[in-house]
Length: 442
DNA sequence: CGATTTGGATGAATCTCTGG
DNA sequence: CCAGAGATTCATCCAAATCG
Image (cartoon, chains in turn green, purple, orange):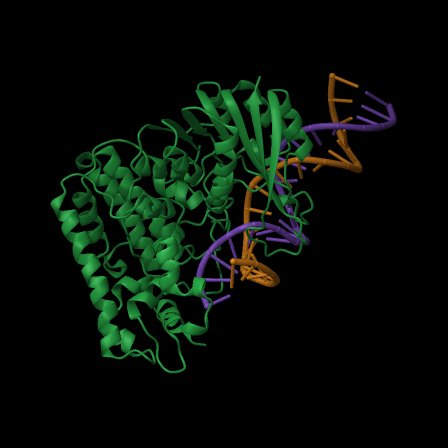
């Protein structure tokens, strides 16, 4: 297939001119750089192949790597590598010229970085839908994300509300909000150079530490676990020469880095026993989101609800029996760093932050929260996983109960969206929906 | 082909019921 | 009121299977 045979609106150049660069995929953008393909392989196919082959390492791709691909000679290889180098150069100059923290990426990219971690029930893909409803149904200057999780909803809210409150009782989520949202002095060059040093560390040169003794050869390779534990210790040692913001930037960068190499399915309820872990630790700095006025809390949602006043509260509780504090205990242990005794195969600490929203008392807790909170609008997320074959995955509150609880507070509208983010189980989730309840208080 | 939600067995802890 | 039995709830464990 030649590019000329494609309909006009799916040709990269035409698409770019009409909708701008953000509408194009990475391979489409690369196709424009390349300009033309070769016989039997059009430019889009060629670009796609390069993107696939390089994966995450695209920015570090070499002329040699590229020339191995059929259809890429030195001319095209140089075109690509030169373009990458040019952009890198400009970014470097921009960085070294500025004293204050300057985000390397645009706001949109910071948002995508915030969600660039494995976290059950994260609302990244639903955020557009949620805000399309919020924009129509709610008004006000302040927004509270009271079960913030990854923080993506709060981050979006920060672009349109004057005052944003972001809360989660997990230590790891809290550390991430402190890094991304909190005000405070931050010398980017300083944290960058620390991270650069961390990336030079080789696990083989290190002695065992708390992290490697517990998690090495299990959730992480022995070598990576040693590096992670060493870095965590070092961040703690440097605490007196770091500002609070710098401290949390380092902690969060570490959290995002370990997420990428963990020998798990994404949470830490178990690790793979059979596969031999062969990971390589690499740390990359996170880039905080510049926001006007964000308050960060680490409290039980029901406790915080009694203390705050807000125009809009977004309530996104756990939907089923899976306890977040048990799923992400390794992150919790790493952030707290009080080095507790760990139990069981999964090496969990003693219970902390167990949520009643994961138990049969969930509806009572929700009723209490809704009753206690002082807000003009209440927005609740929930789905319809009521027929799951696994009791752990069944929703804890019925649709009717949520509606009844909210209706006592004011007129309640329900919005729904067909949504099956992911399902690998045996239950047929054909009719899977995500719901958004919006209540305007009396 | 990498990412990730879920199945489902197991057993412990807690709650409820019942008869004396 | 209380022991003991039966019922229910809840956390643990470990990835398989399926999606984009």
